[in-house]
Length: 239
Ligand SMILES: *Cc1c(COP(=O)(O)O)cnc(C)c1O
Image (cartoon, rainbow, N blue to C red; front, side, top):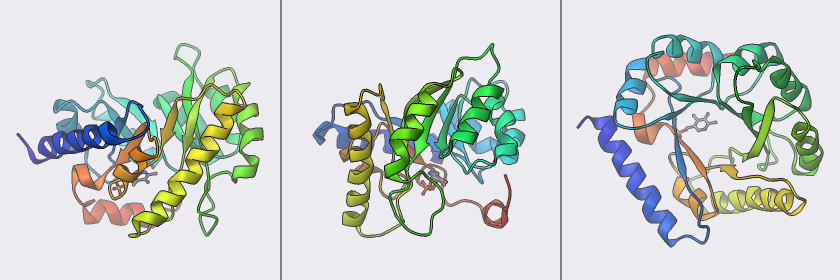
């Protein structure tokens, strides 16, 4: 067993145990966030049974994908989206979690190749009300969901959120509850959703208690992001 496969088994066991005591009978999928990790780490996790991988930066993801074409990975795009990058995202990913405006959604739908299934998408909601410019405000969510639902090459699956980081579990809980309320409100309006993409390495157990169906985990699986690559990510200005 390698370190990554050990960590993978530990995380999957924790997911199952938290789910077992939670209120929501949901299935929880682990999305392995491989940003700033080398292709070799992705391969190692894949060999250990992991199928879904998430990337934030388009060029980094494409470089890695080129080294992993022999693996049946399901790639998820989870980073900020510049509208001039939508074509490559539509061509090279199965899922996009970070849609927060209609223009980007329209471009993704237009660029999705007809021979592929519709792009599976989540709308990113901004519940932290502060500096973060990513994510749609809760009061604009229904209009965006309505418009996205009409796009032929997109399939709206649910919501994604990145709460303001905090070591206070209660603050995380409150933020996850807010996303959950947005999700329940859309379902009550008739949207057929099944995906709540919340929870990262430090708070995924709290997220599962609030009904997360995808937890996005990087460092708890792969270890600390390596400094050279992490630096590249920090310095990164575009996509
Ligand atoms: C980096 C990142 C993650 C994973 O973060 P960890 O704390 O390393 O688990 C999850 N979601 C998004 C959008 C990210 O950018």
